Length: 187
Image (cartoon, rainbow, N blue to C red; front, side, top):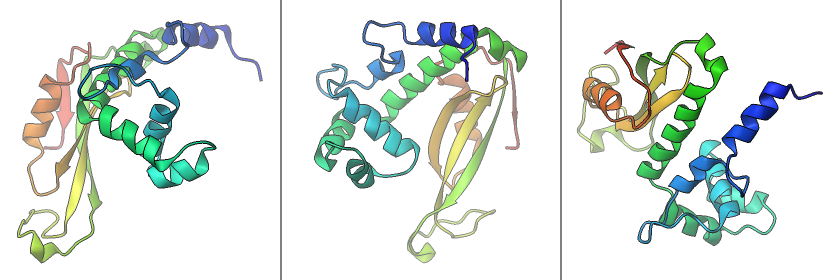
């Protein structure tokens, strides 16, 4: 298989630092000092474990030389909602500037919706009721998607709350360079 020249040039632009690391990784800073993670291997292993829902224990078992404690330390000190938000914004901003993304849209239109996942536990213990889901416990991943197919904001919310405030929050506080002028939702 031959890599097209445009793909090679895009890769070299994305990895524009001396270390060959994706620039979004700089946003996973230490909670107290603000320094970037020194243990990049553990950081990327922890991010991958989170992305594929593997968990830190299984990731430590799957990676030679990796331990649960090493992964847990990186997660405790470097991986937070705000660091994910900043990293995602950097990825979306880069994607928005790639010329090919313009074939899907100009980045001014978006949509949002929630995807509900059932949670364990007894429903009567929460005393919360949702018109659509009843008392069944769960969480909703509320995602904003640009017309360039980049998920520019993702937020975990309770399934018992209304989507509308989270839709507006996503439009106002997404931290990307996207200028959304038109938004679609079923809320």
